[in-house]
Length: 275
Image (cartoon, rainbow, N blue to C red; front, side):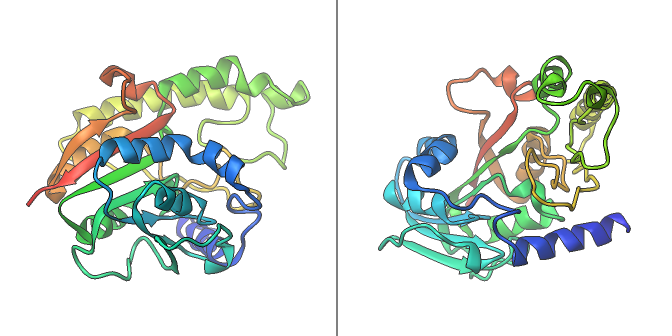
């Protein structure tokens, strides 16, 4: 099966399945814990609540929590059957694709997305769609993993590959092991580190954003981004968004030094659409 065929299968799974492809069965206490940094990043980036589009909202809990924070929220995801959060007067949930948002131009004051962009087969198109429906002067908030994180690579080599597995699977891949971006075995993790360093240097030196895609693992259940088809990282957004009439206003989680963005395991980007 080709890479494009695998991505197509993956998108069908997202639109047809729930439990094995997204977080389900949550309650408010668990949802608050899962989405705490996302909600905090959005509220710190946008001090004045307005009309907000939550792209790739999954079960809808992130959208619900944003509505509780005072925003007028529309959540969108590929499978409406997966919505399970409580209803709220400030919340509307709709089915749709991030690559073809079913909204008029300049419809929202804020566009926000959490742990979704890495699963989209054309991240550039999705970002341009988000910017299209964002009002001039509005804010785009992207919260996602940093799959080129040097800190995560070091932890993979020194910690993750040694945990909760037979000794033989530390060094050799078994057929049932998921294929995570940073590797699952020690040899894979050791190869991943210099590969990530090379990609980081290449992206920093490139004049334009170079979105790097990967072959996703299409066998559920999905966890630790084994199903990611885009090697998400902050460098791409910092280089791409200014070419799309946007100004970067925050790179990295608030109160963390700028230099930690290449080490951090998360991508936190806030940008303002220029008038």
